[in-house]
Length: 236
Ligand code: AP5
Image 1 (tube, rainbow, N blue to C red):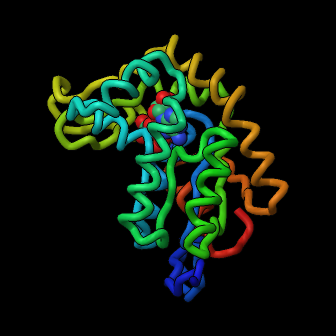
Image 2 (image 1 turned 90 degrees about the horizontal axis):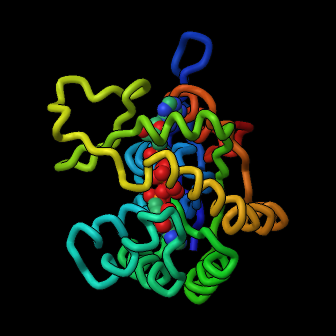
């Protein structure tokens, strides 16, 4: 099963835009602390590289909105900043990967525990596949807190804005909401949980040679370019 696909990479460099054909990785996991820009970059990858965006956080929030049994159980954990139990997330991921045929995907927010990383290996391995690349977005804590506490989500479309960096121009402020887990106290708890439970997974992927670190401190476009380069096998 091929883990790469021929695409045309377009990168803005020194005042001009260059395009050249590349073989990009197509089974990718985006990794990084809350607010490091996983959702923003995953959406971009999905649009520009024709990958399917699988965000466990988004799927769980949709389940909460739809008041499903998974949603009701997950909500209690999410609103406190805790991770949702593995068995609930596992089903969500297995279904989503099945829907995309186990290829051409970017996972956003999964895996988040060692057990989840092992489960992912098993799901893919049983179909003769494996992850091609894990992109770790890194960002200092003080910037993370600003990005999350000033993030706003459109109530109807789900579009993600930032009051300073991606302003919701012309949108009725009543339609813009703060995620319940973006309250400052919950953000600190999410960061603590990330360090305790998710960071060990970084090392697991690093030892396997799959992890590529990307400096996520920069404008959204600058980070897009670093991600593009990483996908195309260059140095971010
Ligand atoms: P999830 O939704 O995955 O939350 P998260 O990992 O904490 O990440 P965020 O969505 O908060 O941030 P992001 O990194 O996507 O940043 P974004 O691009 O939005 O999970 C939520 C919860 O679900 C978890 O806490 C857990 O309870 C549960 N869950 C999910 N997956 C699970 C799993 N596998 N196991 C167990 N539980 C699970 O950017 C943030 C803001 O910054 C935005 O406003 C954006 O516009 C702005 N921004 C982005 N990039 C830039 C930039 N370069 N410059 C300036 N602003 C930027």
